[in-house]
Image (cartoon, rainbow, N blue to C red):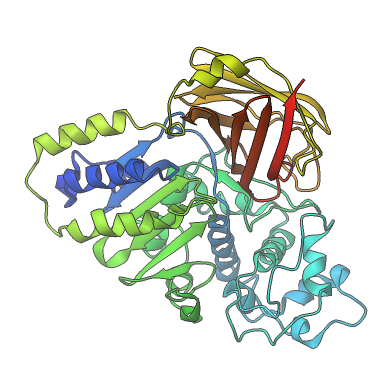
Length: 487
């Protein structure tokens, strides 16, 4: 069976037992609660029931998947095991004689592939930092805290080591290794890729960049026990084990963990990534929910699965439902209008005319900003400021979202540890929340995702500034308070 027939669009959600009204209610709650969604995909009985994207995101646009990448690595491990080139009981230190200290700690010496797959390493936290030049090296050279194979402790270094193991055995990047037998056969994007660690390997713990449909396709193959239509694309026994409970993590409020794959209630399993990247599978109902988003720092971020469970899951029917033309029309209209929402507030205030184009000198502050000004032109604005890298300008929409570039240029590129001097793509909007305060929101939409929020409050000749960032390993320059006066 060809891939497009496996993963095709249904004539209507009702034909797959999903009420259009339920999907509409889900989307309305996502926007009403201002959850930073970028895209969603519903699959029932191997067919797409609904798929939508919040402009400017599209079906074709690649998205950072963060820790969903870990689940992909686990499947690459399973493929090598199926080929007889690796076993679950192999000691990972045996594959890295060049990374070991003169005296390797016994707990690290006996750590197995299985231990790393189940996040049961001997470490209590990830062994590397963004500044370490060799992340695999840190895993074997940091003093461990407890015996391996015993307690669940989420450790991205485990996946980094597993990725490096796959790439040493395969001789190519892990996604490239997976392509002929698996990824290409399910229609995975040929230009999908993975960011690299400082030592040059794939950052399998967090760096896969692909489409929402790519992620959902991998999850669907797992939900079907390694089948894509009638074709076997993954080893069945391994997939069953990977998606089953292998270690307990209920003390942390979870439902168990398999091989780099989370267990879910309702006998489900999921791929999960920071910022609300999800592929949640319910094999008993032949239902898959997948989404891409950026909810870092948002109190409602982790509620996406809860909203899905409240608005969609209880309404699934095992038989086709009567067509609901009214709800279908309302759903189509809603999906056509999906868009990233601007920050709430007013488009104008009396203070705007008084401060536009006025420079303010700032006292010493954590952001290192020495001067700044805001300028307004209709429904657009510009924030100009000087900091350690020089003069900068950010353009934003007022009452609308404006796409552009964030002006900081010292951030990581395709490889951690290297700074190519690029500006990340972003969305920016601002609004007046009272007569003297302008709020600004910036969403980074590049190979890194993150956010910056700022308030600018004016009082006579003075200005107060507050900034807070929600991002991993960047935007560090934009946290704190500042004050100053007109120049």
